[in-house]
Amino acid sequence: MLIINLIIIIIFLMLALISRKHFSKYKKLSEAMSRCVFMFLKRFINLDKTKADLRKIHVVSDSKLEKMCTEFYTKIISICMVVIFVINLACMLLCAYIQLNKEEGSNVIKRGDYNDEVIITKIYAGEPENQREYELAVYPREYTEDEFYKEADEVFDGLKNDILANNKDFEHINSDLKLSATDKDGRFEISWESDYPEYIFPSGKVRLEDLRHETDVKLTARIDYLDYSAERTYELVLVPCEDSEKLSDEIGVVLKQIETNSRNSSSFELPDEINGNKINLNKMDNNSYKKLFFLGIVMCIFTIIFSNNSLKNKKRKRECVLEFLYPSFVNRVSLLIGSGMNIRNCFISIITDDDKNILTSELEFTINQIRAGYDEAAAYEELGIRIGLPIYSRLMSHIAQNIRMGTRDLRVIMSDEVKEAMEVRKENAKKKGEKASTKLLFPMIVLMAVVIVIIMFPAFVGI
Image 1 (tube, rainbow, N blue to C red):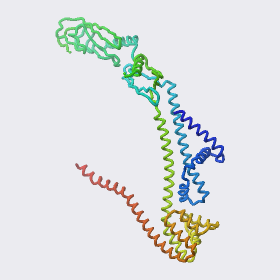
Image 2: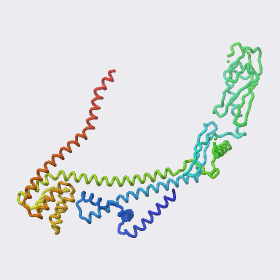
Image 3: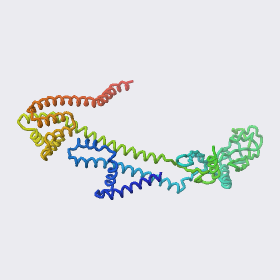
Image 4: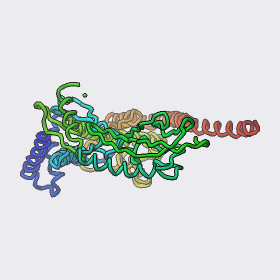
């Protein structure tokens, strides 16, 4: 995986050198690199469709439209490159972190203390592509022989003070003894026996009903630990009293053997390899890298989809605005033509009197074309094509035809268009009303639920 990371870094470095050489006019390196990638990818992209969508949003010339299209894709490419670089850097840091932990002894397993529980540790053997998992039972630390006898002596010394319980001393035993089954820390199990088991039971119960005279008894405490054992004998005198009371495959075998042979240490280290299989405490696979790269790809795809959706939403809003402005626009043109103005002066009057919007911007662009020497009829037809809505295309086609043919029925045509525009306005009002009722459906459901709760709550409280 590290090789792939290095290849990506090399590709970025080569791309930076090439972009600096051929796109040196751009001050920012990221912009230069994005331009370089775009020049390579532009043959695979449908630029005409993107230009058409951008032209519907912005009223610009063809040269400006080309520049906007390039900037649109350059921005997307720049975001994707940043995502890829960051993800690749994260993968390299993750790899370096794992290797650093490996060098510092990541295969060292720490045991629990002497009286801790057995810990189940997962061991991973083999290469990342074909790893095998083992579960190793790591037992708590064990005493050496010398340590055991030293600890046992301390335990026996402590027991001497606890054995008597309510008895006066060892020469006057006439009630139950306190014979603990373990030491205070729970490290060792203790077994008890006496040479008079009919009087003293291993639990500490003392029965002296049949005792007729004082009897010397030897009480032996025994601690067994692994292959070691320690004993201590306590001499008691029973006094009669009428009121007295009563692991699976080869690697697993090797792992278990290592664990067993090191139980005298607080920790032990696993070898880097066993029978040619790499040993790791952390599961080493390519899933983490794959997840990061997959995340980068998803983020790039999301960026592209988000950019395209944003462009489509702007286009849709622009079409809604133009549809809303159409009835008033047709009505204004019809009135101005009726007053004796020609189409060009009608458009100039609308541009001058109305606030600036997408329609006046398109009209102003068309008037500038005509003033620059463009054919008037062709300019009006192109206006209908640029707007892209059937109602505008039909109107501009009638106007262009009237200019070319020189007919005098434009007023009649505009009167019919006014009537058609009113119908369009009614249809748009109906659509907005339907959308509004749909949006109000969820609040109505919430209000109904609240009302039901208000009505039913007192009934439940009364119950």
